[in-house]
Length: 287
Image 1 (spheres, rainbow, N blue to C red):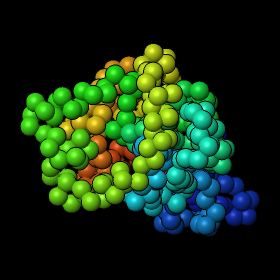
Image 2: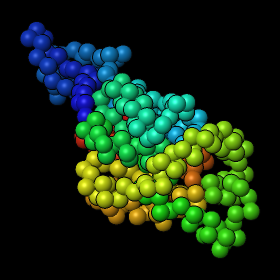
Image 3: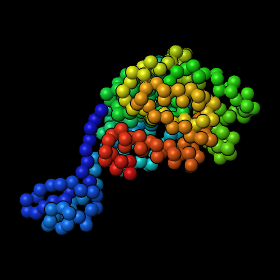
């Protein structure tokens, strides 16, 4: 994990130019509780990147859609990376891990992986292979084992859902505004790549034991009405070790960041998670 430090402003005593840190724009401190007389030098425009967020979309075989919801929602000291995962010439999970590693190498400060659905599985695999390269991972509507597969359809049938093809992804309320958007995303799926990774990696996917031994922090966000990756499976993740924090979004399904009220909860949780994992003073990186 890379470490970066930033001083927003300095109170400087003349003429010895002794330096003591103070808060940004705190000009009222001059001549009072700081060392008088002093001048405040604000380092605006020179702030280093403290955090890099790398966003991993679902699929496999879909284009990126996370930029639509997350781009520009974090501070000037946060670098955001969005990309469409490689689709041509992929032979297995190692090719996508190698591609992700290239993006991690371009990160600055503390690096967090943010993965939705399949992207969360990819984030887990990378973090478990290279825990020292990341500061933490944020999973959204993801899984830690393939055992959830098929359970959603059975649950929907019991409660009278499943007639609409998007019932597994969106609540009926969410479908009112977001059905065309999600349908357009799903229609772009590269079926050949999905089948390849489903048979070569996802069929035996089970990170439970590896996550139990992991020491990096994990924020696990999911909707309580998710029937694509059932919510009960996602709740179990929080029980694997003490470094995992669960956030259950009530009234949401597989895309808990689309509706404005749900998105606000997700963004707030992400910002607080990063600030807590980085320690005191890190909140400024997200503002």
